[in-house]
Length: 244
Image (cartoon, rainbow, N blue to C red; front, side, top):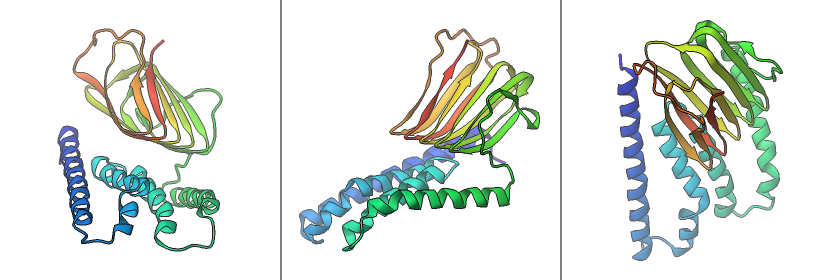
């Protein structure tokens, strides 16, 4: 079984390969247009912002353990590329948000049926983290708050689409070794409140978004063998790490 480090290195190699492949294809296509192998009218389609979103989505799929952000970018790029290829008598901008809402609704129904763990509420007061220190939730047009009291935080996964999550870890401790928290934010955000002496490594692929450590004071790690690794992607969203 692969360790977390081996999995990370494998994903980085796949992401590097995907990015290199996309760049090579862009160069070959540009060369083909320059020598009139393809009709020049195709150039504005191939080298467009829609194709850029599709390319970023492909690279994102190879570089992350979650395919959802990449698939959404491919969908958005492909959706707006259709009227550039075909003559349409309707406005695609009028169809975009209805399709997005329908897609989100189908995702909600599918998630409930498969896992029964879909979160669709905002908790006004922080609640204890369930599942013995693990977190596994998805927020769509909603949010949640958690506080870990005298508990070992073991990581987990958070997916926010037009939603938010706040986790207070100031009273928690990390398990020995690496603790991984995977975050995928699409028009959403995550706030982590951690002790000032925690060692945190951020590995977030940001596209029109970001994730940063905004602790005013970062002390030397009390136990350098305990590390929190925050990985994932932020598309038109992101998050921050804070401390009191």
